[in-house]
Image (cartoon, rainbow, N blue to C red):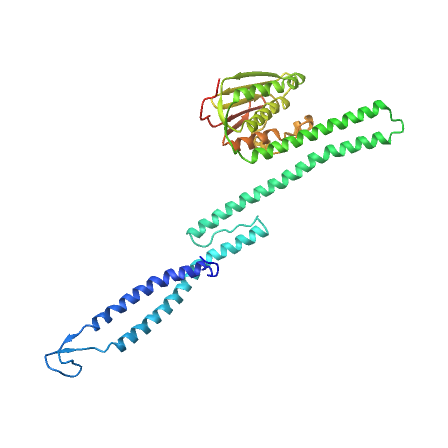
Length: 364
């Protein structure tokens, strides 16, 4: 439509749809008597009043045409007025929903539209928008919580680094050994910050989705993850058992590698001395089971949120930030993989991730 033509509102369109058929029908009904009156009527053979000398009488149609046009014009005006009124009444709930939704989105997501007073499509629309506002409110609340936790996690090592350096510089008996010790602690805190930033980047990458899917084998990724944490497991006196059958799947190998690494690393870090970790792959699934503290069923879902750990683990494992399982869930959701988790018997977790099968066989 050209730009100079104004766009018709929905109310105007409904009015036209209502008045248009009414006008066409009225015009057709008024045409019927006009056609009948225009026909000649036999009235004898001789000339007479109104005759033409051929034995027929002609009817003067001017009054009929005039009356028909006036009636049709009146019908058009009435139909447009009635159509405008009916369209306005019909669209009133929609205008109310639009105004309320605009106010909710601009001021307070906690409000809801509620029922419109009718059990019709407008009620369904209001219910759908209320569900949307609820999800948006939860998302914004989660985002604020995430930002607050991230700021706290980043601020803590910075504060500790500054305190260490200030204490070292204020010491009048500062020696090379004490300065070297302080620098070593600052480096350790910097490494903790680096791990946190890497975790945040992995979480952000997992939530962006998968652009390209490639075949990979979960068994290879699990074997690499087990080798990477072997030294850490030895220091913590944790035994790693593997049962790695071929498990071809499809997705982003880099993200899935991060998922497997975080899953295995979490099982090793949140364990107990003398405990064990079992890594299994089969079909298109990877399963990681570990011993560790007892996980209450009510806290299970919370552990897959960013910066969430059990109370005892928060104090014991200062080198963790509670991002491992959140990264696992984000990458699983991005791949459309099925993630199931439940507390293991006697303590620990039992986590299984099932991916989509690979569209073609992997090379040997």
